[in-house]
Image 1: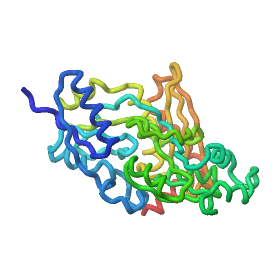
Image 2 (image 1 turned 120 degrees about the vertical axis):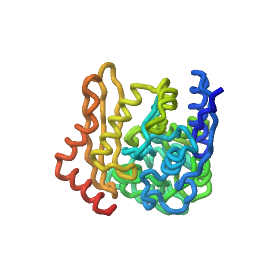
Image 3 (image 1 turned 90 degrees about the vertical axis):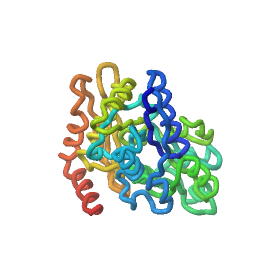
Image 4 (image 1 turned 45 degrees about the horizontal axis):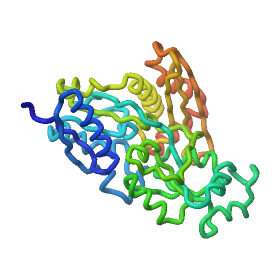
Length: 329
């Protein structure tokens, strides 16, 4: 009997859930497997904000190293955490069908009060300073928590008077921190909470917020020369999810190349078409540039790159990219 396929995974509840899903799908096609737990740098350092860690690959490179050293045969990742350029010697074996791509706001307090605050952006749009004070804890500005540069930029673009606090840890830890701190709430990926049945009733969909490229999708990677692992996983590759996430990641790669950037993208299938929406914000949220394109599915392979090129043709959008690159150097 062949040795079981070794599945590398982080040891958080969500990561284990995702790896277990892959294990079950392998079992359905008669491939035995086992989980191998590995801590990532992003799991070990829970103090430094992600945007200061050089976040590209912070949750994946430890697993990549284990894969290349043959401690594991495949690695399972939240696809939005995977750098757009895979490490040398590693290839994408499959993309599991995407769950919801949405961001959600997990809040504290009365829903009516929170909804009122989220519907109004500033005093000029109908909310007074007194009303803002009523909606906050300890008379401080309305405060939300997130470690995502993308979420910060989009939130501040919509709510420029709000305060942002950093929050780190797995989803269980972050949910606990929301209750422990004097925040009004925090932003989460809906898929992460829903997969492990932790989405609170005190949450609302942020339909206006474009997600991170590939949010809600799961990627499986293997070594380039490992044909057995590739074929086994590719048997349950979801072609539409793979295409849509490729478009989103191509958009990200052409604009910037890393996941710690205020860049959002979403491609969805609409009958025989792929509809793509993307945006880039300045890190302070004051500027936002958007693009939307729809093409036939047969012409969609280059859609992400084409959309990025069109956005870069706008001098102001190109300047945001240039400023962010300079800030990272």
